[in-house]
Image (tube, rainbow, N blue to C red; front, side, top):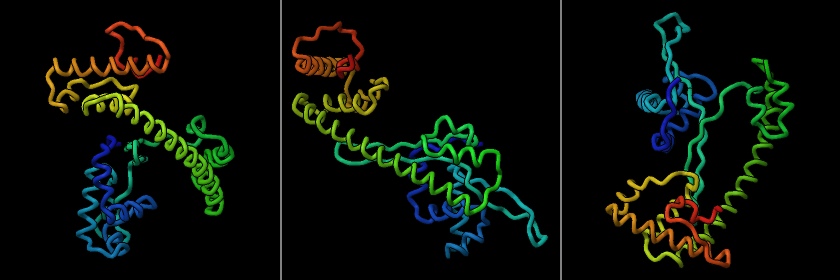
Length: 249
């Protein structure tokens, strides 16, 4: 099994409509390049070109199969990656991430699944085939649960956006310089991730002394914000973890 394709490559590959149409067919069943050319009404040369791009990106794999007419083996393509892309964009909101779908059969997934699909797991576990009618029933049930989860996620994302909007207003009023505001926004974007100070210094084109001064100023202003919120002076040592000044006491 190949390694996971990086996000930039995934977005580049999926931006092409014909490649998306090819993948839409391949997820159903393996296809020959000539089949895809006839179905999508484009040249076989164009299909092969895009299949090679998708293969380089680890989206599809090819294999040789015997010809139905007794000729030389033919090449077919199938999808090999299982991923999920999530893009959230709006004022005070930007998130673009790629997630790998968990491996394993229904029973192995059962402890991660929400309520409402237990009967589906129990019904299909251990079976290699189910009828179309039964499959439609199960798919409809799973889709309803997915829709409910999506509605809840949409509401959470909207709440996240409202929080960031209010924080941005405070950042705008309390931090004078763009670099200071960028430091705070970087903290908010990934509060559990350690800062890459070298990358940040390079982005701002600052030397070590200037970067140290910038961080010191941001710490002091975050300390002042925290004190104003608490209603009293907040004292701490100078070596306190930088993320402390977000107010996560």
